[in-house]
Image (tube, rainbow, N blue to C red; front, side):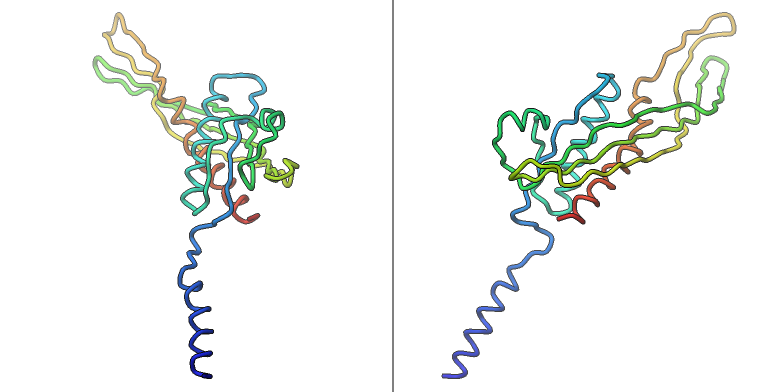
Length: 193
């Protein structure tokens, strides 16, 4: 009888222990809110969208059930329908990229302008309780990045040339700084859960 009781106790403890997966955080649904855009700039809007998408991806990689809420905090307050345990908002505080130097590399018919660009992404991370929608925590995040990027390309001869700006460069300038801010935000969120 004692052996049967001991076996039942071991089974009762062992089965839940082996089914526990520490990489999954069940019950922790995190919704990432759309950030308010204060000045409505095109680059700020792109950065905010990029940060939101990357934060959802980063939280999922860390084992959380993260989703894009597809609404702002103001919309969430009006609806009053909470579907997450935690709401996260990253409000852009400052986004800029400034060339600090550059050089033009020329061949006979092609020239490329290359610049050293300092880019900075600063944001305010806000965490809201899913049940009450009250602000739980607020943190300021900031990252700078220095990159060497081509900014323009010119084609032509000595007497006449045509120059083209490289639009992809604007995105590349912020990419590394955005990634660092997202990782910092995910660390803050994970440490608080």
